Length: 105
Length: 88
Image 1 (cartoon, chains in turn blue, red):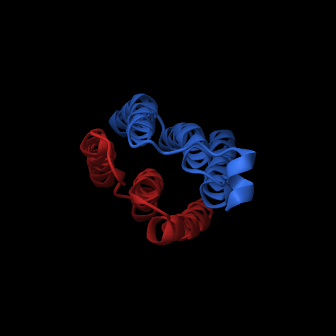
Image 2 (cartoon, chains in turn yellow, green; image 1 turned 30 degrees about the vertical axis):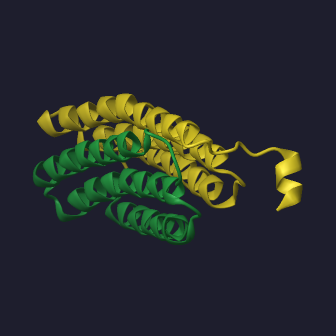
């Protein structure tokens, strides 16, 4: 097997690991802000690693240039959308989770 | 390598179904929006992997790009709609 394929498999597996961690965080965390903390950062890094792995597998061409363009766009767009949705939650007076609130429920 | 991409796509598909639990049962609108955004991010990678499996990356890459733009615009629009405050 080619050495570049091994590098791309490594990138793709680490991307899958971060996707898995973000999903577990989305399912298991107790509050909306905690869930956003998991998906906002985990998904950004996972998409970046997966797209880098796929573009290494493709080789140097117009397609891999487009894949890197998607990676740059996601790196800008994902934190922006996370910030917007968390600010909307603050405007809606959503109470952040504390230990006292958690015991009450 | 093609087998590896197939198994990776199947794993991502499972993760999409796990995220869908939060999208269906999540309390409130905001949890659902966060879950849909996460699902859209995973779908982008699944589309690219499908392109590599079918050997038609040059076609699937444009679909994936449009999907990324639509996911971003949808989340921003929902956030703008909820920004006035009030009950959720």
